Image 1: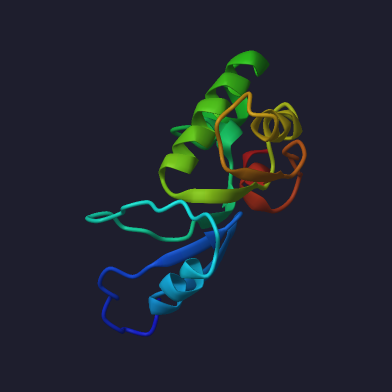
Image 2: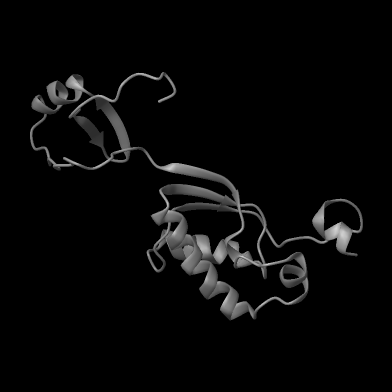
Amino acid sequence: DGTRAEAIPNPGVLIDGDQIKAVGPGAEQQASQLGQVVRVDATGKTVMPGLIDAHCHVTFAEPASNDELFFHRPSEGLTALVAAHGVQKVLRAGCTGFLDADVLYNIGADLRDAIEIGAVEGPRMSTGGNALLTAVGGTAGRLI
């Protein structure tokens, strides 16, 4: 938590909907005042809030070089499938939200919508539009 304090052994965590309401002894006290509470035994587990990746590119498919990224792209369909697999990897890595700053083939909005309707398992997603190539500046500018 950034304070260098020792971890709290066996703390309670009270979650209401998608919000953490209390941690530690206060969580147990508040939970006891509620009617029906679902208890989850997380003994031996690490419990932490989700991480947010503020800048990634799931449609880029982990290219080995800029040449591969900009000049040897897979088809739109394969890019979409690889991106759907990529968002699952982001979720499994502990991120519950991310920003895909720019995307290939304008797939970002469709992928975000597929996550929101449950067609693809993934974290909350914000997305930019199609990646732009410019004549000056940035990696793409150095390739022209």
